[in-house]
Length: 159
Image 1 (spheres, rainbow, N blue to C red):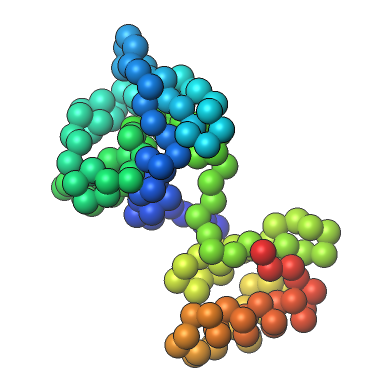
Image 2 (image 1 turned 90 degrees about the vertical axis):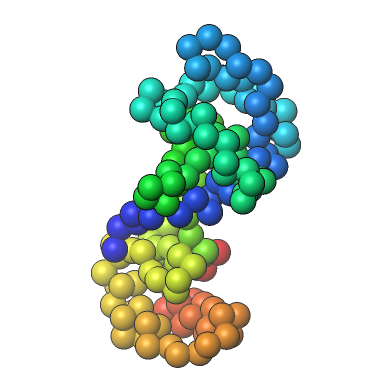
C-alpha cells in the first residue's frame, strides 16, 4: 500500500516549537527561523491559501502548531499554507511510527500509528498478512515487540 496523507495535521501540530516567523515581506513572503539550528528560510504563502492563513483560530486549540499550519473549518482537513516553499525538513517528513529496511539498508516499508503496514515489497506484505496482521495483542508496546521480533527473524531491520 502506498502512503496517502490523510491531512490530519499531527505532523505540524508541534512545529511552532521549531519554527518562528521573524518578519514578513512583500507579496505574502516571510522569513522563518528554525529555533534549533538558527537556519533562516524565506517562504511564501501559496496563492490559494492566503485567505486560510488569515484565520488564526488554530492556535486556540493547538498553541504549538507551525505558524503556517491551518485547518479548514468546513472540511476539518489540515493544510500547510506555504506548501510550495516549505522548508526541507517538512518536505522530507514521512508520517510513520517505524521504518522497515531490508538487508541492503533500503526502506521497504513503514508502519503508521494504526498498526498498518505501508509497503510495496511483496515478501514483506506477504509476511505481514500471514503472521502480523492477525496479532490481537491489545497492548501497543507488547504488540510492537512481537511484530519487531517477527520482522527481524525474517531478516528485516526495524527502526
